[in-house]
Image (cartoon, rainbow, N blue to C red; front, side):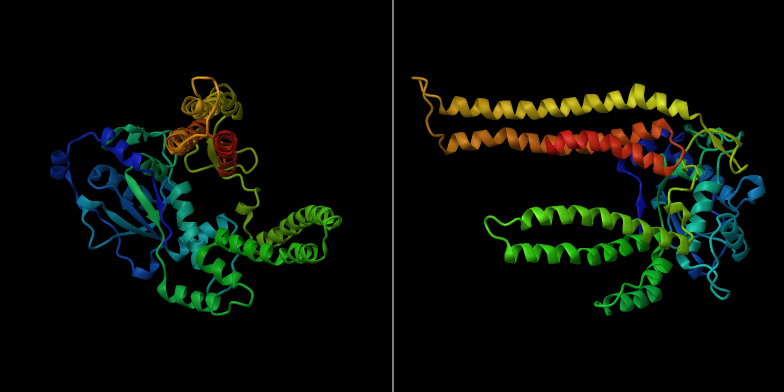
Amino acid sequence: MMLIEGPKERAKGLSTIRQKNTSEKEEQREPVECSVLPPKTTYLVLRFAPGIDSQALQWLIRKIKMPREKGGGELLLKRQPSCDEKKGAVLHVSASAARISEAAEHLDLRLIGQNEPLSSSERRFIVLHELMQGIRALPEDHHVPGYPTARLYNGQSIVEVFHEVGLLESFYPLHNKENLRRLRKLWYCNFFQHQPIDEIRAYFGDAIAMYFSFLGFYTTALLFPMLLGLIQMWFSGPKSLLPALFTILNSFWVILFLVLWKRHSNCLAYSWNTIKMTGLDDEPRASFRGEMGEDRVTGRILPQYPRWKSFVKMYIVSWPIALVCAFIAFYIMLASFWAEQTILVWGTMQEDGTQMKPDYAVQALVMIPSIVYTALVFLMNYYYRKLATRLTEWENHRTQSQFDRHRVLKLVVFEFVNNFM
């Protein structure tokens, strides 16, 4: 099961934004009304937080079922029969064949056949896209009903807001045991044959298929440096030039591998029509905030936010904070070295100024700063990753690739200082 869960602090933040206490919610709780769907048509499962206000849940359900012309997702819902709302409501999301065909045409997904026009992974992608990208706040939607502090901006993804504040705990697709068993037989039982990339893509999606395609391509490409390494190991002597030749050829191999993989991945992306994995897609992120306006390139009505504001936030606030954190990590590292040296000198220095060999007690004491520093490195990495995510989210980058790139840059600067210096 591919699970997407929010961090634990979202659940803690949920308690701070609730408008009513538990007893008041119990009095006003309403049953969740959803459509009845065949089990096999479930493309996505939504699991909500325990004790969610019924106003918020009913409002989101109406948004999901509402026609697209009125700002809804026009999707189908059913409630899990064995679900207890006190433990968290669970809804199954699906879509009609006409709705999926309409969204597929809008997303430029290629039809691969008449009997089975779209794979299960493509249908799940369509439902997830319409749920996250299609259901956005309207000008009259100022906050989530029942949670006045969960404010909404015009054009903001409503489902993303539910997830961020902890009202939506997780969302995930369901496995198909029959298809999974068939894929397992094709994959595991044919160990020395090529991977069933098309079958992997049909079940898990484009990203997972691209990942395993890369693994297969990389493993095959490693045969060349493996042969070179064996030749060097067998025939090189003390004054042999083979190690230097191996280094040069290995450098050329890396360049050639990157060029060939780029060509191969582009061929796969073209044949799969996965433009969203090529960096050419400019779809706004689900949590991208901005005023709704006409896009100058596509003509679609999308959230608009000045790019210069993101740059101002980055270079005036985010990067100074990141550099300060890196300097703090650097000085903590120096303090650890200084503490080790101080303990070593204190434990080995004699009265006449000479140093003796450290005994076991001194050796144990010298290890204490390293142990403390190791724990601090773990804690600093944990909290800095949260800080980097919040800063990058606050910068309000338009696309997911921009968000990931700027977040990774912050992490690289800090973790290089914290882990590798």
